[in-house]
Structure formats: C-alpha cells, structure tokens
Length: 223
Image (cartoon, rainbow, N blue to C red; front, side, top):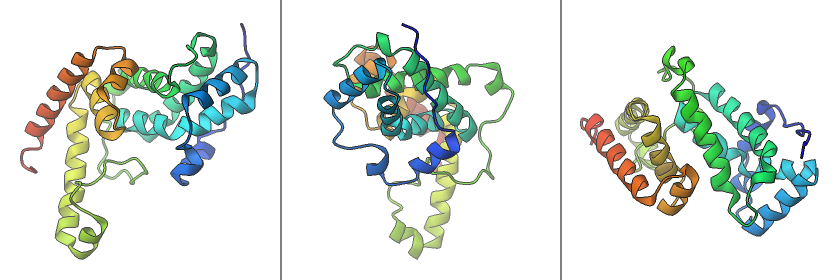
C-alpha cells in the first residue's frame, strides 16, 4: 500500500516541543492499546494519528540519537528519518507489540550507520565548547543542584567528569554504546533492549558488562 508521508514539523518546532514538560511530550498513561489505535488510524491515512505518535515519542528518539552520536544536528536528522521510515513501514508493524522498542530500534540502527559511516570518521564528534543542550551528559549522580550551588569546587569537578564521560562514551563501539544508552539513560529492562536491538538477552548483558568495564578503565582518575 503506497501512502503519502504526512508533513513532519521542522525540527526547530519539534525541539521546542521537547523543551516543555514531559507530560506535554510523552503521555505517561499511554498504553499499547493507545499505540495500536494510533497505528491503525495512521495506516488508514489519519495524519493526526501519526502526528500524535511523533509527539509522544520524539523526545525519547532524540535523546537516544543524541547520546549515540553526540551531535545535535545529526540527532535532528535521525529523528526525522526515524519517523519517515516508521511511517513507510506501518503496514509491517505487528499490532499488539509495544511501539517504543520498534521506534528505538530504527533510531539506534540509523545512529550506528552514522557512527560506522565515512562522515563520522572525518570529523570529531565531541567539542569542548559546544553549548549545553537538554540531553548533554548529566553530571555525576551525587552532585545535586544544592551541592553544586553551595560548593563551586564540586561543581567544577562534576562538569569535568561530564566532559570526561562524554569522551569516554565515544570510545565505545556503536553496539556497546547502544546497549549502554538504552540501559543507563533510557532505563530499559534487558528483555526490552534485546527486543529493540534484535539480539539475545545474554548478548545485552555481555555488551553492557564490557561497556561498563571499558568506561571504568577510561574514567579511573575520576572514580
């Protein structure tokens, strides 16, 4: 079935939406039944239904794409491509299955393609002077806002750790970075990561173990 792709808003509009509250972007009460209804309606040509899918999941897709690629402009493109590909493949989506892992899998695959491609190899992905964005690496978990405000030295150390963590993440293979991102940043359970990446649960655990081990070695001066 050939289907015209609905107009997806330009990313400056999408990014503006993601800066709102989480409730505005991703409905915490959204269920598989809600997603199923939206997919069915989108298959029938309801652009509003597909637009709701975009609004529901765009923040998570962008977050994964940025954490994987470390470049805002690349993450922008991956978000656009993810939803375009998803729209083209709606007829092949298995109704009743969770929608999020399917979308995350598309985004992760696009991110891995970028990381393994010639464009990535020709440029440095990490820039020290890049302005902070909403999905920059978070500071060390112990450095609460109150501690940072009351302890400038700790604040400086936390910022330094965040930069070091960003550089260390770039040294992980794309496959290990994907597992680490989905587990640590997205909080996905092992089974969902396995479904998202199309690998076994054991492979997920093995890759996560190796990723954490390498990060521990790279960040030993900060731990």
